[in-house]
Amino acid sequence: MSVVLLLVVYSLFRVLNSNIIYDGIKIDEFNVSNMTEKEALKFLNRNMEKLKKRNIRLTYNDKKYIYSIEDLGFEFLYEEAVNEAYQIGRTGNIINRLINIIKVKLNGREIKLQLSCNRDKILKIVESISDDIHIEAKDAKFHFNNGHIHIEDEVVGKSVDKEELINRIIGNIKSDNIYGIDEIEIPVINIIPKISKDLLSRINGIIGEYSTSFLGSSKNRIENIKLSAKAIKGKMLLPGESISFNETTGPIRKEYGYKDAKVIIGGKYTSGIGGGVCQTSTTLYNALLLAGVTILERSPHSIPPAYVGFGHDAAVAENLLDLKFRNDFEYPIYIDTEVKNNRIYVYIYGDTSERDYTVKVESKITEVIKAKEEIVVDEKLKPGVKLLVQEGRNGYKVKTYRYIIKNGTIVDKELISDDYYREMNYIYKVGKIQ
Image (tube, rainbow, N blue to C red; front, side, top):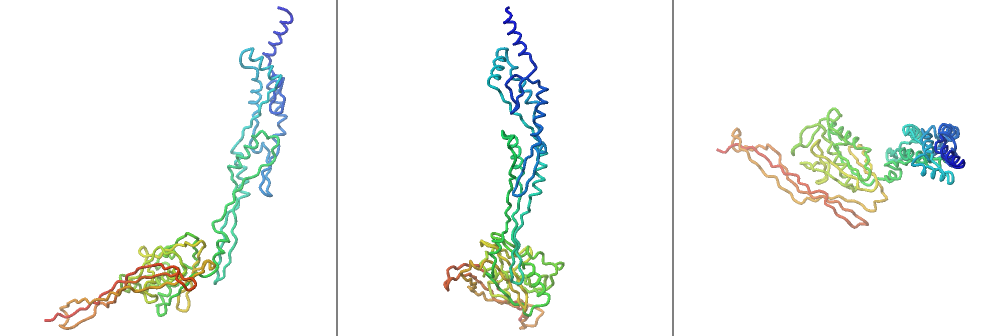
């Protein structure tokens, strides 16, 4: 074997059995050729130290939050990159290894330095930023005082999209542009309040009002009217919302201040807790009709009450009869009440600019059912004696209509209710004729 051949074999042996990274290999921008693994690790640590301390700015409007890559929980995977660099030219048979070594020397090879991230550490920072930026959304507020309206502006809420911010941080720092990163925009979501000033500003005047008299009522009955009127005062319905009179007033009980007064039960006047509350519900009902509000549930009394015309009453009784209605307008409605001068007043406020019409409610008696007489023979009475035991009254069938009138012309007619006030027969006791 010639000396030249021996030298070639010796050189190849040294190359294939060296413990250094082969020529032409870079990790990111750093040339680690001809270094041992230990030397390459030390070299990378020294040169990447400055990059680890590089500040990243997270910004939102005039707010800035500055963290280093290290603060954000990122670590460079030096060992994995150095090991990958060292393995180049060290796999396969001798021929393949030599070919790879030569290719790398001629063409070069760059290995991407990977990062690991501590997601919990990033989340902690993101949550701190989120707490600082967060603004609670607040609805506009409606203030009503003796017919005067004042509206407070709504507050648009701010909420950091934490998951998106985490993804932006990880995505940007792990991107190929790591050496050029300096600013990341914080994604913030606007939380729009449900109730805006513009919406509440559409409550600008009375669109329906009604009053009834309670002159001659007992002190207790008047107190019940006042309590129930106060319960519905100040209620607002947004577009699409519905409300129950019974749920709004709550239980009609002594412990809530309601008193004993005359009520209608089973077609007769009797004493009971909350007498007079039905006058409040009736007054409200008529104001709602004139305002054009959608009535969902309403019941007549068994006896037509004296304070309102046939077909215009709205009886309520806990767990039995209720007045329910819904706001089908595109604007809110607001309920105000007033009790003065022996009358209860209910006002429905809304957008008067939408009222290019007037509303009329009219009831028509379609049938009168005459009361009959019932005779009960009482052997204890003298022959020919006739005593009235039960006062009778006629029954009525009544249809109630709501008319929409524009420029003096009826443009819409709606049947509101078809009521039947049952008749009650006269009952007499008579002595038995011998």
